[in-house]
Image 1 (tube, rainbow, N blue to C red):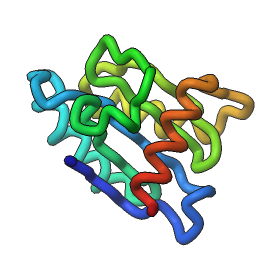
Image 2: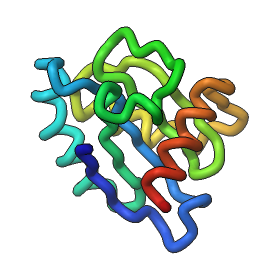
Image 3: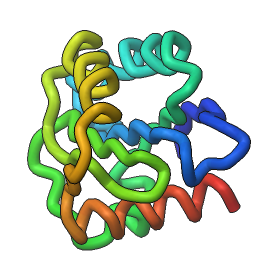
Image 4: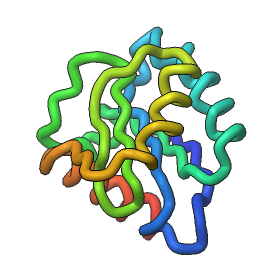
Length: 124
């Protein structure tokens, strides 16, 4: 299990999560890991988690991850974004800046289920 965790707040339900869904065999994921870790250091208010979809298949369950990296962003309660993202720091940084200002965005029930499993695994 490979995890990068940064406590977001004393109340995890109110802090943002950035969860990268990747695979160890994926070369793009391997090179993105350093970018993801650097963003974690630059955004201490966000909890960053790295989930290998094969090593931690129980967390991903039925979700079909076709493109790497795939990012799941949640506001601590609700999954707000799920999708592939260019493996560049700027792409994730823009989402982290934009999503908190947007209300009503919801990534759907599959994304919510994955977020809840990751949160439960990482917090407990």
